[in-house]
Length: 526
Image 1 (cartoon, helix red, strand yellow):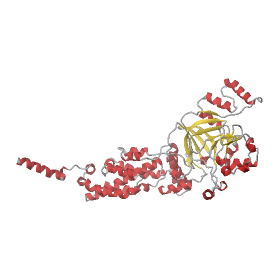
Image 2 (tube, one colour):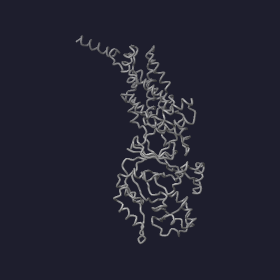
Image 3 (cartoon, rainbow, N blue to C red):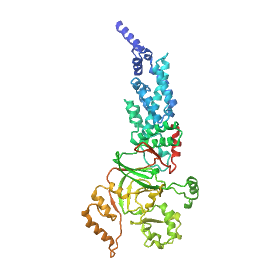
Image 4 (cartoon, rainbow, N blue to C red):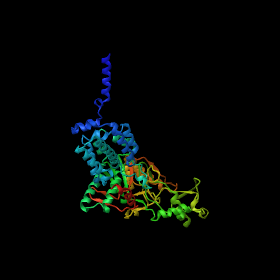
């Protein structure tokens, strides 16, 4: 009995000693790596308060402090990144990626590069005299690694800013990193794979990245308009579209062009006209308008918004539902000036959704344009402002691509002349690419009085023309609708610099003066 009691007492004493304490993983990893018994003294009970105090102190600088705090709380405030990725060299890989962020236009110091590199060097030297020095160093290294990893993968993978916070007419719901994505980066078993995945990999981005290196070598300084333009447009290319489509029609506002891509192939390229630039004194005039409420004080802003959508319809011989803003600022005055303007331009007028039989008899003096009770629609036909084709996609701004009866605009150098929608130079070619098959394309051609490609349909075409030419029966031209092929996206973008197929950088005037706004938001990161 005495022997049993003595043995139990002995076991209790031993269990209270450090001899039987389970070593934390960080102690095992560092002891084996450096063959240094000092790390065996690593006591998590001492380390955790040090780390928690530093974490609380640095919470404000993290992009998402809640994600970081939750990650370490879940892992009992232990140095997860140092434990998993120091010995296998992946923390060194992170350091190299941070250093190379300069090649993408960033200043590595925004990721705490110098402090992080110094902490790695101190740990590499393995010259600690006390375990207390190790606690301090490991806590700092762990937090800097988490900070750099979190910020770097966000900035490289999604862009350093959310453009919706800076541009009023940016309507793209671009992808942004949510808490789950950031948490998955911290919880990864392969740090390097996460870093690689964050890299922009499109040909356009990589070409501009090479151009940045070339301009730096040539000019010897980053403080030039060309390099700033390249950096800004690399940032624009880092913003992720909400989804990927099989084909993508890209309208580049500053270039006044449209390019249709199918993966690496270019199916079409043509000139476009986009919305006119807003008035120079727009902000000041808007303040006046908000106080007075008078339309005469309202400044013009027809800038085409940046947006992304998917085509869902083609309207041939479209009807133009004239926007209220245009009705009040233009149609109203033209109708007052010329009593036959509306009928001559095939514009129908609706009062309380009922057609006004003879709009030329309306006494416009009775109706102030601020409270204009009419709606206006321009019928199908040669004079229609939308021309013969309208290409429709869902968006909140009533924007679409369309033909025009004013072809002269495509010859202008500055083609920011529309009310906001995008006029395209070759609408028939565009329609041909969009329809589902040759049969549908021939029907579309005949709707706009063009002979079918399939000559076996010539008799049908002749009958259509004869019906329209029949003077005994009034023929009323009406719009027809066609369904486009699936998964054709439209991206109305704003790029003032890009590299062409030969690697030469193309620079374009900042037609809407967006670059100064973007640079002001970016310069602290560059």
